[in-house]
Length: 112
Image (cartoon, rainbow, N blue to C red; front, top):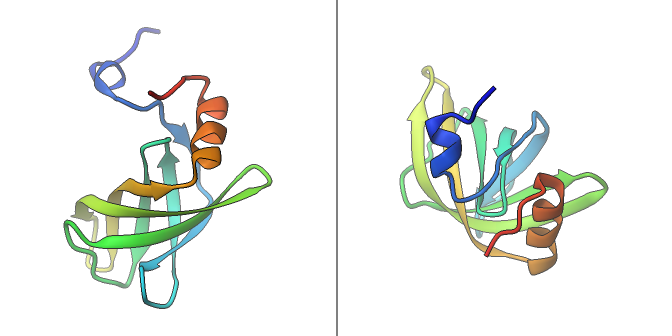
């Protein structure tokens, strides 16, 4: 099976997931969501029962294997899936370099 057009244009290799994550505006209480995929550049997740807007800055906490990663990102897109669920794309703006290395190792692709 060949690569799709989307796979070829992606800057970062995606790692599929369905783990519970937490997210919040940087100075607010945590909310829960479900991670859908993750890369060294960002995370896609579903949020339920909250409003998320383009360019919001969020802190996310998620697990990669036995490691807990905390990162800050900017909402690059948000799509309402139904009246209470939003599909969110978050681009990391602050993430520990060791977490980037971990994600690169898992995806098998070096990010430059």
